[in-house]
Image (tube, rainbow, N blue to C red; front, side, top):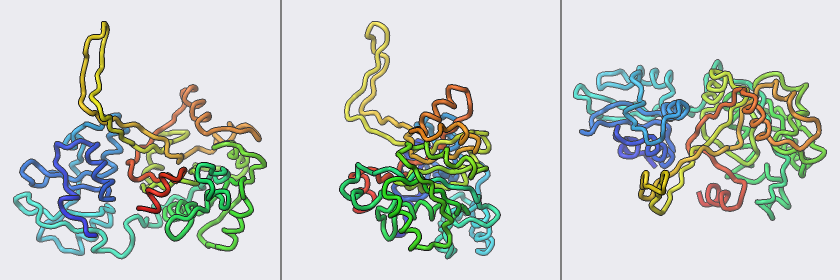
Length: 355
């Protein structure tokens, strides 16, 4: 279905939270920002919102306070080939055409000009980093399906969940995969042996016993020597992974957690009180937002040395250790809609069967 102008436009006095929801609803990462009189004001990207959240700005911040000035637009007299060139350089999914009165007379969409997907990166931008996928769990919340099939091989559309994850990384140049396996490990290996996908270079890390979300990383201490991704095997994140990597490196983090901004509506009026029970504030049906751990991370290779040998060890334990030692742990925000979790039946059916 073609996106309408109303869907991709937003007023400049709207909040970042409103913009995030709108992006999720239409599955786009760029909105056209309007003045009160519907003339053109600016463009708002998911990156603009992410940078604002990283700066610790609240989600009720107005869009007008964070938009950039260095944006690219088209004009009626512009040659289409030059417009295409600008869009390709900026990787813009859309570009408004603005006349001399600052009115929007047209919108050019990436999919109308290019056959290639916008997410396809030029070769010089690809990362080529190792990816560790934690695929050893039993997936008990998805029983009885996981009584027969291991969780990584649960179907999502026309392929398995773990293939979907791996294909996202292949798009950005990562094809060196380490699958940490335990439960039904032989079934997983047999599946990929028969699949014989030339884009997957897979090494299997066998857990002799369940080692938690980070314990098996110890088995990689002589295999990985560069920055690497870690992902659970039951999540999909529709995000530019190169942006996560750039944030990780720019802030010199030892580990970066990818976190989804999840909002909850309280169906009642809430009250805050001070000393002596005196009212400080009252809010009618507020919406609260939290950063939720998605199960995807970027780690520096030195952290492998800090994983105990052959012990059950959670990645959150490692994260808390670094925090207490004053070391750099970053959090990169993504929208709620860009994170898909199939860890339980309710979410699996909602997002992959009904959706």
